[in-house]
Length: 299
Image (cartoon, rainbow, N blue to C red; front, side, top):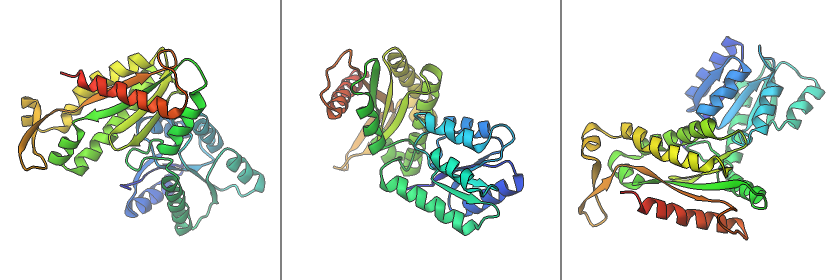
């Protein structure tokens, strides 16, 4: 995977800075928060792959932060390691009951904490819980959400793909392409925060393919807002010349010069009010077909 993102929620600046410096040197992308709700807010903007969470915080305690994470569909999958001065058995059990992945007490061995972090991230990747680039829920978690909603009413499933992503990657390289994937994940979160609810689900099916599960009422608005904002904001990932001419030039597998349009989003939307589903595979297949039709209608 690329650089894993860690969020350290710790109100002691000395400990927070020490952990930030140490894990940055280990090759992680590290962000910090001194207050519990600041940490919750940061997960709304950039999804971390793992959270190191102190229990004694100045606003709400770490237990409450973990509870908020676990009850929010979009953050329930993030591994949490508690870091605390409390070493009572009851405190540890409380943290584990809330869904924490591990519990380490102060003063702690930094090498031991590093192993906890590595193991939690490896388990998450091995079990296809999160996408290594975006940190969003991936394969198994997407399937679990679809199994949960398929017998319900009032939901919609959006299959989202970045059109002309591969030509962009060929011209600009994989680092720029990964930046586009992270931008897209952030955009999905912002639009769902604006128009949807905490119960909405955002996933990364792999590569340039994302999904959203929302309500019947808000899904069409989410679709339109995503498409319009993406088309406008993705242009900052191109150089001036490509933006001005409205396309990129690339060489295909036959070594012939080709032109590809600037990236857009293709979005397929299906729901029980418009389609009949016998299993979750039909949901994804029909949504993919709707997405292909949506992409073909782009001028």
